[in-house]
Image (cartoon, rainbow, N blue to C red; front, side, top):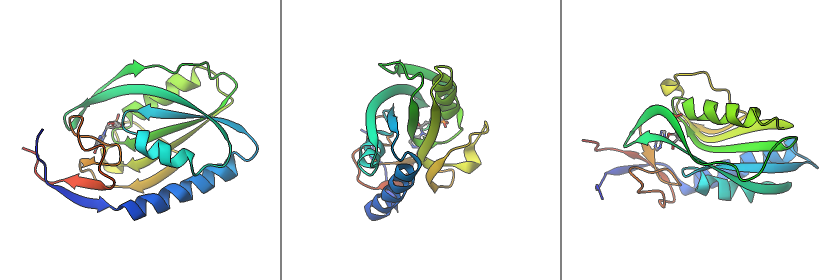
Length: 175
Ligand code: IMP
């Protein structure tokens, strides 16, 4: 495994506070509704598992696997590795992403879900890199807007590693 220098960027405390704020806002929005919360694998599984526990609504869980990254750059091509297990027609969908970088993955996911005719689609991303956007990508909830640097931890990886860091860090020493 490549040993990277990782500079702490968003602390565990900041993450907890933000996740609970977003959870409260989403709870308000979905008052009395049934919601299908879609976890985008693999990067959002940590954020997702914290977030759904902050939402007070009737939630069922679905998983959507996609990949578009090689190392630390986006390939621009989205590959589905795991499709939703159940139809979502007529359901209220909460799509939970870890990070929006070029916006290509989120756009792909939105279009894919909208083509299945849900009752509504709400999007949330923990992180967004506005400077990296290549396609317009409007989100309903965003945790933190960050600069265009590669980050790891709290579910985000570099070559499969570092997802288990409890904080988000910036990578300092890419070759
Ligand atoms: P996009 O399609 O370029 O917006 O990329 C979205 C996906 O790329 C995310 O779901 C992440 O899996 C991955 N990604 C983008 N930026 C980073 C980063 O800084 N660290 C780790 N993964 C990232």
